[in-house]
Amino acid sequence: MRPVERGDCPKSAEGMDISFTDYKEARDPLIGRIGDYCSYCEVCLHGSIAVEHVRPKTPQPELAREWTNFLLACDTCNAIKSDQDVILTDYFWPDRDNTARVFDYDLDQPPRIKTGLDPALRSIGESTIALTGLDRVPGHQSFSDRDRRWLKRREAWGVAILARGKLEVRDTPQMREMILQSAVSRGFWSVWFQVFHDDEEMRSRLIQWFPGTARDCFDAQTQPISRPGGLA
Image (cartoon, rainbow, N blue to C red; front, side):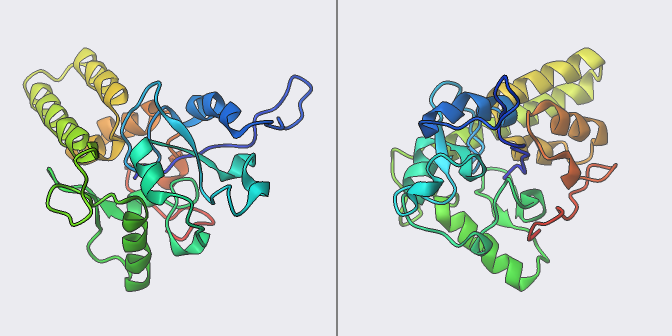
């Protein structure tokens, strides 16, 4: 799960915070800030991505148009999360925590909790995975044939590994830029970040190229560090 920086509420021409009359109006500003990726599974959806309420709007109508309550989500993550209310500190959030410190990505596997994570944080991580069903792959008791997130993630793994192989054969600035363009257009930042785990330059550029990646979540060597004010 990519840590993101949503930023302050967009301003009007007069320099005032925009007051959204409908939460859907926040879609384009959000895409401009953090890209058209699901904030949870990281799939790139281009046109078909929705404004997601971190805390659901149904029981808390006052949060329906609140900028700080917005993220972006695919239909599947949004549907699984549904309208269940949440206590923010019971979960990790990509706009509040350094989720790159919590989750690991292995080839053709769903996200898992990093080895050695504090037990209290591990429990929060497991709840976060369950919240949007990030572990739902074929064989999972709640898996649905309509859920293609695992397939898209597996495709990203294949493309990223192939790209790494090409870079090993022909490491040029042009090749690196082509790989970055492919990564941004496909999504799954965490997959690409893992595939290039031993290439500090590429990891640094992945942080820069994916819009809205929270740069203060990484040290100079691209290693995840604690996020100020976050649980992780």
